[in-house]
Image 1: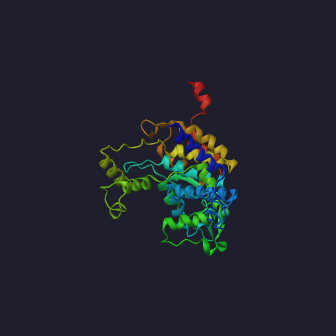
Image 2: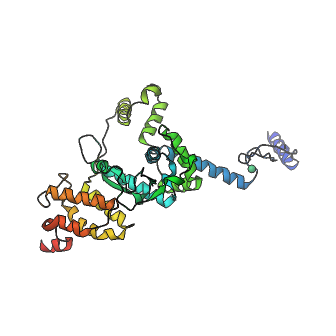
Length: 350
Ligand SMILES: [Zn+2]
């Protein structure tokens, strides 16, 4: 029984010592597509640089895929469609896009979900989206988070400040038609920004595909799910409910974040003080008002500042954020005797 094993080993050793000449292969490089010569069946790229480039390209595709299905990108696309050009992102940098994303996230958080509440906030333009001779940029510096109603009333007015691009220098290749799809517009935004910005932004922001996109993918995998034609027109909420039913689960609502006009305006005054330092005086006055919002009752304490005085303050702050020169004295005057003492003296009095 010993011999055959030894013999077997010997044969193998001999085979290694005198290998048959390995077959030369001539595959096409997976990156540069040029033909190269190799003896390894596993080698897919002609050289290391091609291997790295292919990996980077794969990463970029992945990042674009995630980013392209994110609600934020859909927001950018809808803004580009409304403005008629992707050049609303003129001069965009990774940092600038991260700032813009911050404004977007804050607005989503501040806006309450559900139809029963009236406090919804919108991103409004300082230099209007479609001005007379210019297009307001989609840039954190040109945007204000404001109550929806106030924003709608403000319409296309431009009180000053903000960032815009001259309509005369807009290029035809970056135009977006009214009826363009979000998908096409997102691709146009991708080409406009370029791969480097896209890739670096997504590497830092790590956006995820929208809930809707994820739910639709889930339905694709189910055997007994309705046809895509039936699913497509359904709202995200309805899709979520149907998915939960199919899974035998209950739908839980994400708790609301508590925001009111006072808190949103304080946030925006602080944010814009970064671009316009003259706003800091107004900010410190408003800082004394904001603590009187009751997060429990979700109402502002009217005993401290009467509703009409408060409404006047809102208007003044809204206009100031939209470019009117800062006038903190006027704000102090509007609040008059209602203005609470600075926080430290207030604490000392108690
Ligand atoms: Zn190659």
